Image (cartoon, rainbow, N blue to C red; front, side, top):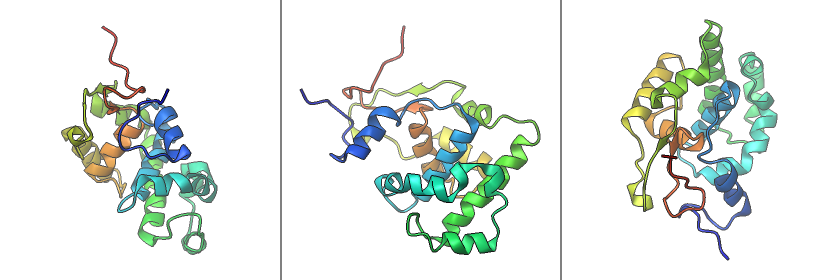
Length: 189
């Protein structure tokens, strides 16, 4: 029996595993949220599958997205990263991860919790949508616009409202699995 998935998923086993096991599942760990936000920013102008296929390369190149290590990257390290065929070799995107690491560290070093900050845009719990077709999925929402503005104030970039909404979907802040998808689980009443 064939499993019913959201219509955006291809037959690629990596994409199917991502949809089935990662996308839309709530993530609360601050560093994991930081990593996913950085990866979503790399997607700008590209398809998600392109970044997904390079995820392990990104993790290796960016010290498993440890913001303390990334924040120390200098111009020499940037030049080395730009020679790495395993990542998207775009200077703005490489520098954005470094900039985001510095913004993240400045925020948490003030005693703030990055996870609480991000989850605050959805009231601390997932928004469960009830979409029946891909056409109903928004590219951005008031919540993603607010998140984008707040992240930019913290010094982040490649965090526009569309990227923020894709991030919110990926980390389970919103459940945008279609109602006929086997991963869709309506809220308990």
